[in-house]
Length: 147
Image (tube, rainbow, N blue to C red; front, side):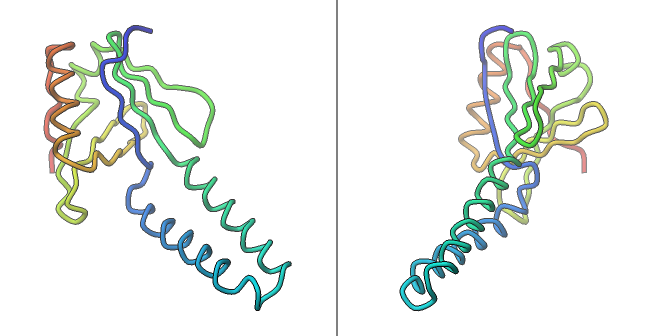
């Protein structure tokens, strides 16, 4: 593989992150507030559940790395990588960027091999930085996703 041009990562399904954060926050507050009153064993069980939820959240992270040679997709839930050559990415409409008005954020959608990965890009500055690096190194700008 060649030099890294840009790297972005995010959850496979950005809409699930809010539920995970609420669950982790709720369990952490319960553990902190009721440790003395509830008892040691329940506190340990809640701590284990909290840790399992955190690990499950980390396993759903997808990382897209643009290199000089192509695009590498790494999934947190499975071992292995998917490598997409640069020619296929540029000519095949594999990558596109969309504005999600519901979340008020940008998403990068990668569709390849029958799978669709959606990575939340959070803000316009991150999108501009990634697009600038791709334009400079690949001579290509990711298109907007069709509706």
